[in-house]
Image (cartoon, rainbow, N blue to C red):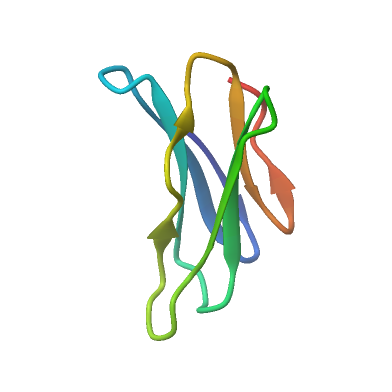
Length: 79
């Protein structure tokens, strides 16, 4: 798991070796904040934090290529 903190929340890049997939997660965020995961093939999954919640996660993207996660304040490195 790659993780970094921004003023909008804590963004994590998650990986499942079983599914060979990556997804992004954001915690400690306000509703309406978006998070995304992008892989090297430019597959992107984005999601907004729902009203009344402080966290969310994206759908999975192909994890056989490198990926990164981010929000409007920046991204993790490519892993």
